[in-house]
Image (cartoon, rainbow, N blue to C red; front, side, top):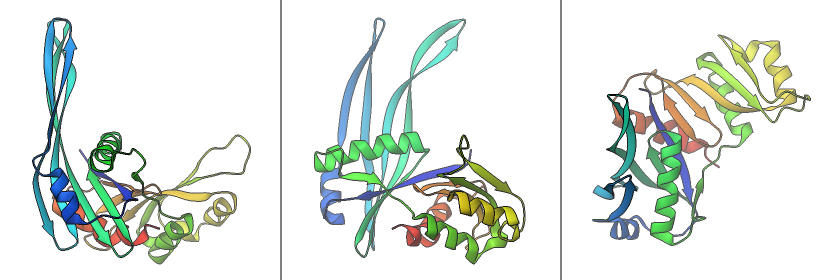
Length: 227
């Protein structure tokens, strides 16, 4: 499975220490009933630590899944872990959730309510289209795929380019004239890994690597792009 993460922006002025105090030893239980059975769904926060400008921890969240047991669907508890990292960057406070985007969105909403009593306190981070374009053009030979959105051609929602030397393709300039870069697949200059990146800060590694290396790639290559 590829590693995935999504980055959010915290709109409330707070410190890493305050966040750690609120999250430390957090545990909640929700009872969910399926047929005659009741299940305790836990959400827990653990392994909190502050290192420099980063506060990291693990959120464990239970969910019910249904498995086929001799022709019948049986509810089973599954626990999903997500690493969370709050990072101070000059005038910004970012939250990175290392999980696929739908789960990351749910975790960000939960943390927004838990920490700030508002679902509007933690929002999607964004990269400006021109910033993503500049990122590609600084290392065009490293880009494998480009998707364009906001297309002004009727009945066309997205355009895509695949292959080597994308910047030198006449289609690249033509597509730029009709839309904006939404998603790129590129080769990391840090470790040569193949990564995917969207303007709303969904990051994917298509190269197998330790999670710590993946996080460092995000710190070094993605964080500087966020507006």
